[in-house]
Length: 89
Ligand SMILES: [Zn+2]
Image (tube, rainbow, N blue to C red):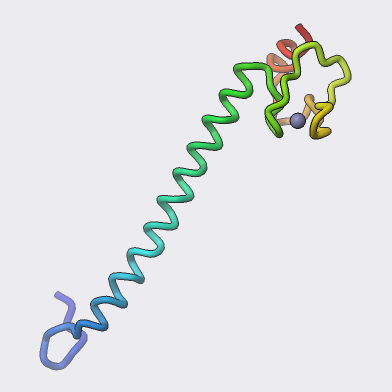
């Protein structure tokens, strides 16, 4: 049991501070996890539909290897050879 005060009872302010100290990082971690999940779902969707992973521009028929919208190199590590082949079809 936490006993921060001589009376054996945690003062209300200390309880609130302790609660916030635990709650705020938990909320930040949760929000970062949600954002990462959203980003991964978007990358998966773009990859599946032959779109640029950087901006979502449709790359079908692109033979330059560079996204004309954002300039991202299609052959960058973020795009697999399969995606490059799909983009050329
Ligand atoms: Zn792009």
